[in-house]
Length: 167
Image 1: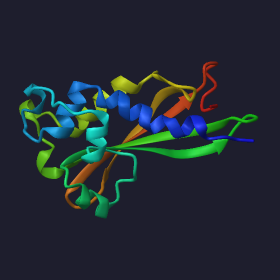
Image 2: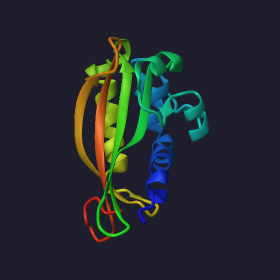
Image 3: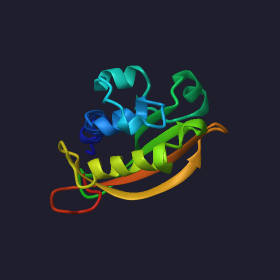
Image 4: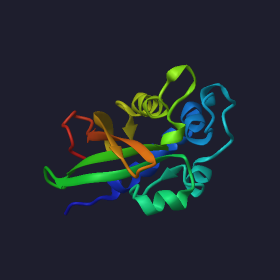
Protein backbone atom coordinates (compact mmCIF):
# COMPACT_ATOMS: atom_id res chain seq x y z
CA UNK A 1 0.00 0.00 0.00
CA UNK A 2 1.31 3.45 -0.92
CA UNK A 3 1.51 5.91 1.94
CA UNK A 4 2.05 9.65 1.70
CA UNK A 5 3.30 10.22 5.25
CA UNK A 6 6.79 11.29 4.14
CA UNK A 7 5.51 13.55 1.37
CA UNK A 8 3.04 15.24 3.74
CA UNK A 9 5.96 16.51 5.83
CA UNK A 10 7.94 17.93 2.91
CA UNK A 11 6.25 21.37 2.52
CA UNK A 12 6.58 22.28 6.21
CA UNK A 13 10.20 21.07 6.33
CA UNK A 14 11.00 23.21 3.30
CA UNK A 15 9.18 26.17 4.87
CA UNK A 16 11.23 25.75 8.07
CA UNK A 17 14.48 25.74 6.09
CA UNK A 18 13.53 28.89 4.20
CA UNK A 19 12.15 30.68 7.29
CA UNK A 20 15.51 30.34 9.03
CA UNK A 21 17.32 32.27 6.31
CA UNK A 22 17.87 35.99 6.89
CA UNK A 23 18.03 36.92 3.20
CA UNK A 24 14.73 35.17 2.49
CA UNK A 25 13.09 36.97 5.44
CA UNK A 26 14.36 40.35 4.24
CA UNK A 27 13.11 39.82 0.69
CA UNK A 28 9.71 38.58 1.86
CA UNK A 29 9.00 41.10 4.61
CA UNK A 30 10.81 44.34 3.76
CA UNK A 31 9.21 46.10 0.78
CA UNK A 32 11.95 48.73 0.56
CA UNK A 33 14.30 48.61 -2.48
CA UNK A 34 17.18 48.39 0.03
CA UNK A 35 15.70 45.30 1.71
CA UNK A 36 18.94 43.30 1.52
CA UNK A 37 20.81 45.98 3.48
CA UNK A 38 18.28 46.15 6.34
CA UNK A 39 18.45 44.13 9.58
CA UNK A 40 16.89 40.66 9.50
CA UNK A 41 13.26 40.81 10.74
CA UNK A 42 12.53 38.80 13.90
CA UNK A 43 9.95 36.34 12.59
CA UNK A 44 9.51 32.64 13.28
CA UNK A 45 8.10 30.11 10.83
CA UNK A 46 4.75 30.33 12.63
CA UNK A 47 4.78 34.14 12.30
CA UNK A 48 5.57 33.90 8.59
CA UNK A 49 2.73 31.44 8.01
CA UNK A 50 0.18 33.30 10.17
CA UNK A 51 1.05 36.60 8.49
CA UNK A 52 0.85 34.98 5.00
CA UNK A 53 4.47 35.52 3.95
CA UNK A 54 4.71 31.74 3.60
CA UNK A 55 1.73 29.72 2.44
CA UNK A 56 1.06 26.02 2.05
CA UNK A 57 -1.88 26.74 -0.27
CA UNK A 58 -2.04 27.46 -4.02
CA UNK A 59 -1.55 31.15 -4.92
CA UNK A 60 -5.00 31.92 -6.36
CA UNK A 61 -5.99 35.52 -6.99
CA UNK A 62 -8.64 35.94 -4.30
CA UNK A 63 -6.25 34.52 -1.65
CA UNK A 64 -3.51 36.93 -2.76
CA UNK A 65 -5.88 39.82 -2.08
CA UNK A 66 -6.75 38.37 1.34
CA UNK A 67 -3.06 37.97 2.23
CA UNK A 68 -2.48 41.72 1.90
CA UNK A 69 1.22 40.96 1.39
CA UNK A 70 3.36 42.35 -1.39
CA UNK A 71 5.74 39.39 -1.46
CA UNK A 72 5.06 35.80 -0.47
CA UNK A 73 6.14 32.22 -1.01
CA UNK A 74 3.79 29.30 -1.59
CA UNK A 75 4.98 25.69 -1.14
CA UNK A 76 3.01 22.76 -2.62
CA UNK A 77 3.31 19.09 -3.42
CA UNK A 78 2.45 19.26 -7.12
CA UNK A 79 2.60 15.78 -8.61
CA UNK A 80 2.57 12.41 -6.87
CA UNK A 81 2.80 9.22 -8.92
CA UNK A 82 3.15 5.57 -7.96
CA UNK A 83 6.64 4.20 -8.63
CA UNK A 84 8.30 1.06 -7.30
CA UNK A 85 6.55 -1.10 -4.71
CA UNK A 86 5.29 1.08 -1.82
CA UNK A 87 7.17 4.09 -3.20
CA UNK A 88 5.94 7.21 -4.88
CA UNK A 89 7.38 9.91 -7.11
CA UNK A 90 6.88 13.50 -6.14
CA UNK A 91 7.40 16.95 -7.55
CA UNK A 92 7.36 19.98 -5.27
CA UNK A 93 6.51 23.45 -6.53
CA UNK A 94 7.34 26.76 -4.92
CA UNK A 95 5.72 29.96 -6.13
CA UNK A 96 7.65 33.13 -5.36
CA UNK A 97 5.48 36.18 -5.95
CA UNK A 98 5.58 39.92 -5.45
CA UNK A 99 3.54 42.95 -6.34
CA UNK A 100 4.84 44.51 -9.56
CA UNK A 101 5.65 47.73 -7.65
CA UNK A 102 8.15 45.89 -5.44
CA UNK A 103 10.22 43.91 -7.93
CA UNK A 104 13.09 46.35 -8.33
CA UNK A 105 15.73 46.41 -5.59
CA UNK A 106 18.79 48.62 -5.18
CA UNK A 107 21.45 48.24 -7.92
CA UNK A 108 18.81 47.07 -10.41
CA UNK A 109 18.40 43.70 -8.75
CA UNK A 110 15.12 41.85 -9.23
CA UNK A 111 13.45 40.83 -5.93
CA UNK A 112 11.94 37.70 -7.48
CA UNK A 113 15.18 36.55 -9.10
CA UNK A 114 17.07 37.16 -5.84
CA UNK A 115 14.47 35.15 -3.93
CA UNK A 116 14.52 32.32 -6.47
CA UNK A 117 18.31 32.18 -6.44
CA UNK A 118 18.40 32.00 -2.65
CA UNK A 119 15.66 29.33 -2.51
CA UNK A 120 17.53 27.19 -5.04
CA UNK A 121 20.82 27.62 -3.13
CA UNK A 122 19.18 26.54 0.13
CA UNK A 123 17.23 23.59 -1.25
CA UNK A 124 19.49 22.09 -3.93
CA UNK A 125 20.67 18.64 -2.75
CA UNK A 126 19.05 19.13 0.67
CA UNK A 127 17.91 15.97 2.44
CA UNK A 128 14.47 16.26 4.02
CA UNK A 129 13.41 13.72 6.64
CA UNK A 130 12.51 10.39 5.09
CA UNK A 131 11.24 11.92 1.84
CA UNK A 132 14.64 12.12 0.17
CA UNK A 133 16.87 14.68 -1.46
CA UNK A 134 15.58 17.82 -3.18
CA UNK A 135 16.84 18.68 -6.67
CA UNK A 136 16.04 21.79 -8.68
CA UNK A 137 14.32 20.95 -11.97
CA UNK A 138 13.01 24.14 -13.62
CA UNK A 139 11.89 27.74 -13.22
CA UNK A 140 9.21 29.57 -15.20
CA UNK A 141 7.60 33.00 -15.00
CA UNK A 142 3.86 33.56 -14.65
CA UNK A 143 1.44 36.29 -13.74
CA UNK A 144 -0.81 35.47 -10.77
CA UNK A 145 -2.88 38.58 -11.33
CA UNK A 146 -2.48 41.85 -13.18
CA UNK A 147 -0.54 43.13 -10.15
CA UNK A 148 1.43 40.04 -9.05
CA UNK A 149 4.35 38.59 -10.93
CA UNK A 150 5.71 35.18 -9.90
CA UNK A 151 8.18 32.43 -10.63
CA UNK A 152 7.30 28.77 -10.37
CA UNK A 153 10.24 26.70 -9.09
CA UNK A 154 9.95 22.96 -9.64
CA UNK A 155 11.91 20.48 -7.52
CA UNK A 156 12.03 16.70 -7.69
CA UNK A 157 12.82 14.31 -4.87
CA UNK A 158 15.26 11.42 -4.97
CA UNK A 159 15.98 8.70 -2.44
CA UNK A 160 19.35 7.82 -0.90
CA UNK A 161 20.28 5.44 -3.74
CA UNK A 162 19.85 8.34 -6.22
CA UNK A 163 16.79 6.78 -7.85
CA UNK A 164 15.14 9.94 -9.08
CA UNK A 165 11.66 10.46 -7.67
CA UNK A 166 11.40 7.24 -5.64
CA UNK A 167 10.34 8.20 -2.16
